[in-house]
Image 1 (cartoon, rainbow, N blue to C red):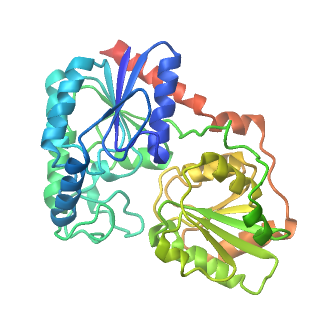
Image 2 (spheres, rainbow, N blue to C red):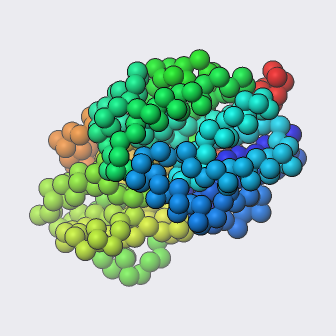
Amino acid sequence: MKVLQINTVCEKGSTGKIAVSINNYIVEQQSTGMIAFGAKSSSYDYSYKIGGKLNYYYHNIMSRIFGNEGLYSVIATKKLLKFIESYKPDIIHLHNLHGHYINIRILFDYIKLKKIPIIWTFHDCWSFTGKCTHFDYAKCFKWQKLCYKCPQLSSYPASIFDNSKKNFLEKRAVFTGVEKMVLVSPSKWLAELTRDSYLKDYPVKVINNGIDTNIFKPTMFNNEELKKKIEDKYVVLGVSNPWTSSKGFDDFLKIADYFNEEKNIIFIMVGLNDRQLYSMPENVIGLKKTNSSNELAMIYSKADIFINPTYDDNYPTVNLEAVACGTPVITYNTGGSGEFIKEHNAGNVVKKGSFKDLIESIKAYYTKNKKITISKKTIDSLDNSLYKEYLNIYKETLKRN
């Protein structure tokens, strides 16, 4: 069996790591797997780069002006089709098709013509909206019928002009009519949303995201510089990439301000940009994004609680990473962010936007000053081995077709 995955990135970011984890499992099972990706670089052996920097920058600029994300990269996509012709995959597994690297119309015309079985994992909502990757923060539900007058032009993928109506109609025409396609969602929440979209006729399965529990586990803290700042203090951690209002940036700082007089509590924010770093209050330690999973596991392990006040999310891996390191999670009931936490009693899920509930939850854990115990069952439900479910879907799909 030969599988080709297509994603914005390879190895990097949550989706890039997920794609690699799936491919590693495919190779371990004596099958053949490749990842075609369009953004950034990768040293992964089983990968194919879609387009170059010029293609990426042109697509990015045009999308930022006209808002037609996924409708450029013509030459790069045609070259990808030549690669697919030579590779001859039995199944194509799609991930994120936004990210300024591929032409969805050319790709799907080819898929429909060749009748290649498709598995498509949704990491966000872009596939059935006219523009945005998430709509919760804007409280916009136009995607259920027809997008227009987009309220999130400045949000990724940002644009000057509003072409959300045109793009909605284009994507509906492109993404429907595929003979052999199965949708996969990491969360029950997103799986349910597809039933209200123009993709409602496709079967959808839920496969939760996994993490590498060989890395994300209780880890000894050895950062001496940071250790001096947080020693003997109760550590409240937040991790995001990037930190925006929709990811809870303002809410996190509001929480820190509330506890400003409490000298035994210190806050850490990982994933800040340079501008944000300069604006941190005294009781918040700001850190840039780290590409080291081992360093991140160390910080998770040192934290007493992990806070995720997100307004837009699917099934965030940061929650899973924190729990695997023995740190309880407090999150808003946004999207599928609270699904794992509820199921495994690994923290608290509070009403989205409820500052009062967040504070009360933090106080409750602070008073007890106790971490959570991670059972083997919980660890097993986090481990990357859950991606073997994809192999089952591949086999079922090929057998059915």
